[in-house]
Image (spheres, protein in one colour):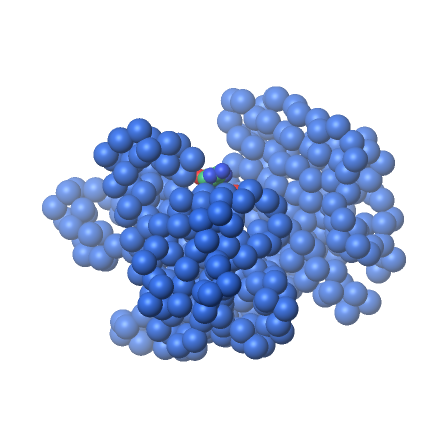
Length: 402
Ligand SMILES: Nc1ncnc2c1ncn2[C@@H]1O[C@H](COP(=O)(O)OP(=O)(O)O)[C@@H](O)[C@H]1O
Ligand SMILES: CC(=O)OP(=O)(O)O
Ligand SMILES: [Mg+2]
């Protein structure tokens, strides 16, 4: 066991790796960056060392192994390489933990096999997470590697929220239930929201709206998740960048039987060519708002559809919680798109929800309240920090094990 105080966090996506090296003594970032377009012609690495100049490299990174080796070289060049004795552990975001993994887990061969077995439940995410783990273990076989699962925070949802109303025996045989995702973010943001209110998480009920490229909502009662919008896979729920969110399962049968699409084609359609992209050809909310402002009908409808779905979940979770103390907007869209927040909260004064236009327009990286004093429910923008949460959970596990 090392005496190090640093944790390297890896968030490996299908074609990218995001990373942060965090000093757990004060939570400061020694370095952060990303490699994107892995396996494509124009790969790009951006590395930002603390207090130093950001470095960018454009080259081909044929696979995740090459990308992680390039990251390791950048860290070494800053004197904070993977061979550093100060490194205590590597923490990995793993999207699907299934029924078994409901807490941060020290990665062994057997754990890795189990994460591999879960690939069919998160085909866009788990394979990349596994590659990240394999390469990191190759680079530092002696170092503890910890998996922090997106599903973990949702593992204690009441059974009636986790169940689909389908034949119980079939569901159980195939592990078909609602797992939920983005849990690390929902956990971090619900706690940070309680802190913003000056309260203990156990005292507050919060609706967290994680609106990034993927998006999900959750209802958190006294620090415990009681419902969330994603399900068996990260496809259910909100309208997302490229994912449809909720559709009648009959759509799948219809497209297969009548439309002649194969199951793989429908999978691709709903996961990669739907959502905002499918509705208007763009998946970046900035571009959609700009187009809608210019009177583009498709972009306007995409925006309205996105907002309508979001409001249905807000209303639903209000009823689930009974009493709502705060609504927190987070992730790329939630933190930056004031018009999305305004539209999602419009006309809800009867529910004790209001947004102050001036406060909503403020741009800041800090957690902040955007509702007026008179609002019974506090509406807030609370930047997420999945990497810090992963680092803390990793460090806590490694510390506890030593
Ligand atoms: N200033 C902004 N205004 C509106 N949307 C923004 C802004 N900045 C980023 N976004 C949105 O945030 C999304 C990315 O969010 P992020 O949380 O980084 O996603 P992910 O982690 O899923 O890649 C982008 O698709 C973009 O639409
Ligand atoms: C689980 C999930 O949807 O993650 P992301 O938003 O990173 O795609
Ligand atoms: Mg994200």
